[in-house]
Image (tube, rainbow, N blue to C red):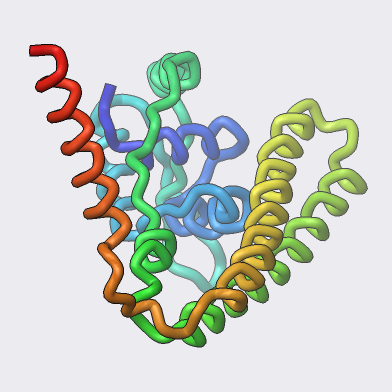
Length: 211
């Protein structure tokens, strides 16, 4: 199945209601935005391809005072493709975290800059946490008996746990770095190089002993 995951976000939203490309963009940002970001440049080309595949049907709708818009609905073929994707094993995304990459080498720059960045990240996540708690409460109050509410809540609560963990990690990391020495440019061997040299030396010694 195609690696283009945008089509499955679109198909999923269209199982809830027919949408134009613009409506999908707005609704996806509100409903999925805290765990799934779509490239807006992908939406319209993907809609066109899915329509050509027979996954979507479309109608023209006129709204008074606004340009005519094309509204898409999911077809039976689209529903089958969506269910097939739902039942597939989830793909594990490559691990690439620029923040951790910077922190790994953080001893080669100003300690204060590292701490300030962590403080900024912590503050942003605290705002996100408050926003997500509001969304959770709104769903419970307004959609408590909706059949899809349990599925929506598990995604929201994943975000709550992840963001809370990030805030706690920022606090711990700031405390750890505040206790670090300002001067990390030490004449002692680089720990990583020293570690690998030690491994090579031990490995060579074992081979010599076995021969």
